[in-house]
Picture 1 (cartoon, rainbow, N blue to C red):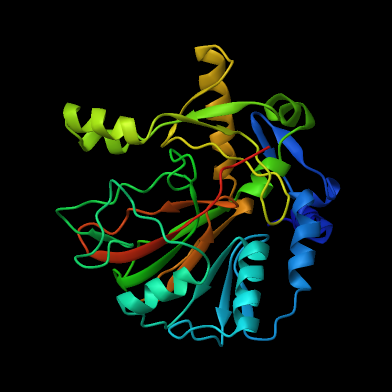
Picture 2: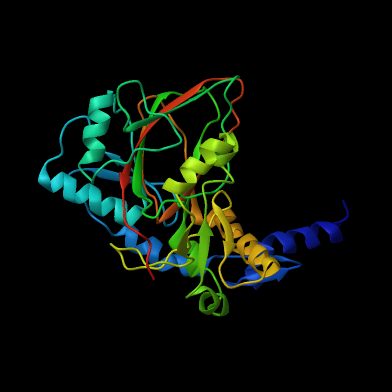
Length: 324
């Protein structure tokens, strides 16, 4: 290498990261917007300052997800611990516990401390515990939860949250990802926020759970679960914050728009869940537990462990009807 080229290389290294010339700005490269997601900073800092009496916290994402350590959920929680777990759920949107060898009764008892439990009409419960939905995936039974969604939005009153316990997990793969739907809403432009403020979407079980039913059973279940309408941007009953409430599994159209307008807006809004900065990822171990707020987050179960076995059990808590 010549002396001149060595000097040029030294100057380039001294200049540091070429992104320094942009500062803390987002820039547009083709169809991409890259750079720091600055609006997350206040929430990230607020969560960093939280203090807890009954557990310690290891946060996972910028604004979503936290492991709670030093608390035993196999036993009834004290009033102080229960109040703090409820607050932690509201703050972190999804909370996790390690090394919690829950039996079925303990699982149900823990979840029931937060509200009445839901019975799922399409997913069978365990043999003697209808409150517990069992997800037993293997080479014969694949995982079909690998798309971003809130649970049971086709209900008039969707679940408030869910408690998922890992019974058996593969050595690798099978992680669950969670997306902060407050952040997904906050990241929208002011123009889009105005556009969706009073819009509602049609939610229907038929495109997903209806596929496995006979025509007769579809008609029977339609009587029990008619199509429902929910706001695109409801307000959370605990925090009062707006969150984005639309998913590809159950949303069939947006009321008041043409078919093309509806398809385009659904596509755009569901894409907001794909921003990695809004997400956290949880790697399961046996007897790990996840407890998520079914309005504040969407989730995605990675189906990347074929042909290994993954067995989980879930208890869901009845919630409220989303409102503007």
